[in-house]
Image (tube, rainbow, N blue to C red; front, side):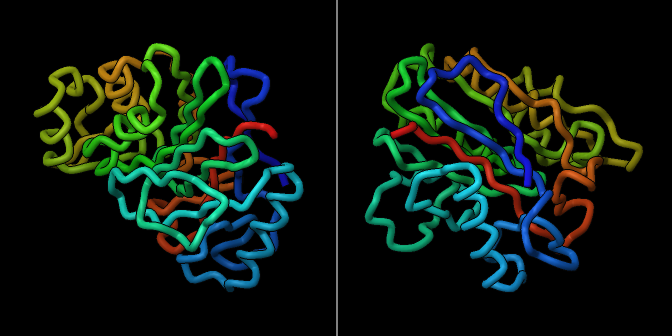
Length: 245
């Protein structure tokens, strides 16, 4: 089992990671460390994978897994976790509890403040990104955007993320600068979108300028990453951030 640790100047009490598909007990199309319980994998294997990750990485708990719906709701993480809420982001100020999102092409964004008092995580597909899930996550942190650090985890890269014109139009309707994040595809009427650039534009508009990461492509690296666009039925990776107890 291995994972990616953010290369960002976070405070010493902030811990964060993004898993790859390497390790774990899942088989077949889910082979590796599948952490998604909603994709058709055997539930026992998913639970075992989650337990293995939590133990190996020393992640405190209980982990508040989400039922992600490509929306903008932010779940306030707590010890009284009663089952996966419909949310696409999470936020916590209490040490020993983690914020966690799952992805397999969508963009995971992890947040912390420079003082190490609050952390958040967001799942940003294009709908959530355009809808404001990053802005809602920032608001939930309750601090000035200028003291927030953000890390962009593994997502589909700009040479693989083909979208229709309606996606480009939706982003440009809010930010004219978003035009720079789209280039024409070889398919008529389609565009290649840079979700990393789109996220940076949204974060900058919200006042968050300390942004790191954004160098991976889940679609093109089948050995390390699950990719829904590439494979259809597949597993899910997790990106997690927490305050050390």
